Length: 137
Image (cartoon, rainbow, N blue to C red; front, side):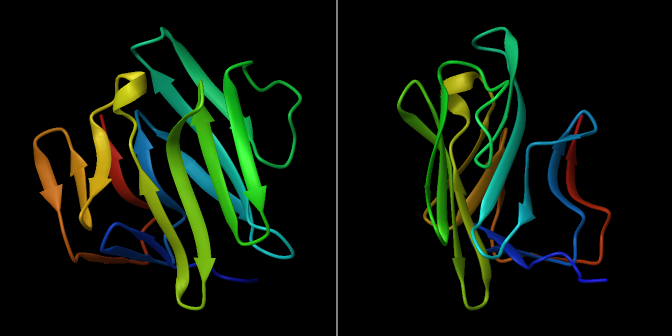
């Protein structure tokens, strides 16, 4: 059995974590496949639009109309109405994630290497072997 890939969110490193960030028990994003192409799945409650955004870069069926994915081998992005919510890139040391969920009403974003969740700022943390790295709500 292969272990979960190492994921970096800003400068925070998640090693062998089943879920990186969850909101009310639901993972915000996951990577069900890394090879031959990086696959991104999202499931985000979006207070600003009054619904859950759920979809996969591997399949468009069932994905809300304004939720789109851009894929390119080792890089994938999730966009809401052409605004990037999340980008991920597979590099030699793991998957690097940058996100900004404020356009859909969630105070979760990265900038200058920091992961912001509400009023908290997380920088240079290492979370290892956790079922859920960060649980919100």
